[in-house]
Amino acid sequence: MLRSGGKLAEAESVIVQSLASMEKAYGAEHSRVALALTALGSVRSARGRWQDARPLHERAIAIQRKLHPEAHRETARAISALGQMHGDAGNWAAAEATHQCR
Image (cartoon, rainbow, N blue to C red; front, side, top):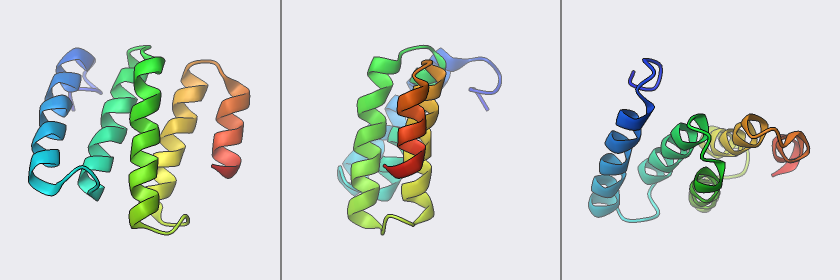
């Protein structure tokens, strides 16, 4: 809701707090942590902070791959978010490569 309302800085703050709580409650490699990492990466990407977003997306993908098969929807969503970030940054070759075979 905050993201769609144009309140990206506020959304980022809420997600950072949520991520810390989830890591404490579930551990660093839980699916909910991966979802929060993807959300945070997407917000940072929307703010033009692609270098900050990329490691978050990559960590989310690594967690989802440990927990689920490659074809699982959560793994696919994490990979897609990384591809979207590359596209947002104007790196079309990386976006295409990510969407094709990450």
